[in-house]
Length: 547
Image (cartoon, rainbow, N blue to C red):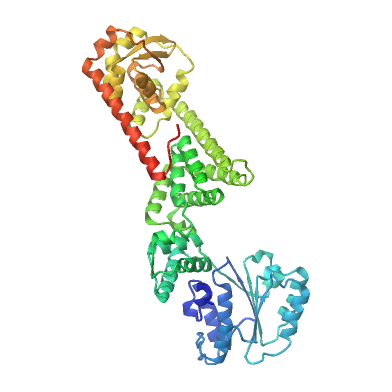
């Protein structure tokens, strides 16, 4: 039976131990000086080398051929070989998770510690998951730790040191193990691939390292699954069968949508992920970790070592996003999604809690932006605020001020302008609009302002697709912004269709038959482009159009 990679390539000497240099150097110095503590406690995340280090320590101190003032075991003597094979009677490994009671501690540890080593210099007790012991078992262990025999060494390993009584910890030399960084994991995995004689791309190794989240044992297990495919070279397609898909591209897409408060696309993305069978809880965890990295990038570059590693392109995207969001916005998103994550399992529709988080964030943000911009306009005065509106919309920076114009205008306040003045300056409106959207100019050339009720301007259109175009939210905001600049009044557009036989001198004055044909051509082209875009999306995601 073939061994798992993490067992096959378990480090047999200190130089093979991946990272954990702060622990490795200290233990090696103690071994070389011959000044060992009688008890150690190794704590840290799973799969980062606690048990491996305990075995290396036991092997080094009992090695028969280890040279003076050196810490590396020879790996060839009887003691080293027996420990490697698990046959050394003086090295006792005890799983505290299955031996939690006081009787087991007395039988396996206390009674064994009374007898001198059978062959070796030291009798070593490695107690894994020591936090699982009962209170009475800890009390029994404490007695032997207080007065240990000179030949006994105790190594306690745990992932939850806070559950170990302080009386036990105080009698041990404590070492805290850390998660491994992505590059160390990649280097280790690449070395294993070389030993196995199998070619694996750096992209695959990077994906494995990132998915394992700093746990070497998980990384080696996942690599073992990939290598089990049996080929001399593992392709990306083959690896995708083993390595879970990364959610970070979808996370980046969602964060970009949230930046622009795009509710429709954000909810569409969540539903697509749900339909594709993506674990929404894991996706939410990835989103929260991604947002945390943005916060860290925003606070200080010096904190980057405390966040997970991503590829170069994703890191660039994070730097850009750090400039787009405020810390308060990021904290708000994290808080919302953290709360909603707990509801996913119990929700009748699993994606609904995330949809609600999206809506809540976007609505609050839009309302906050509107209030802030409205206050700015009140302080700036009407002319200055209108100029600010047009500049922001033209540069693509913000549409919130335009939304304010709609908000204020909807109050149906009176304006000091007449319909006749609007018609007489309509050409000026078309000239101004040319700077923003040429196709709108042609549409409004064959439209007519019909009536002015308060600050609501009713405009008639000859074609339904023109009316639909103007009623699109962003287009409507743009036109109302230009109206405000030209007429120095906050007007809201209300649209209607003109009768098919409607004749007007006003429209004839504004346009010609060539213009009408050009408008039709532009509209047809835009519809065609939109259809092509939809068809491309359907082909890309393997979907179908449902009428």
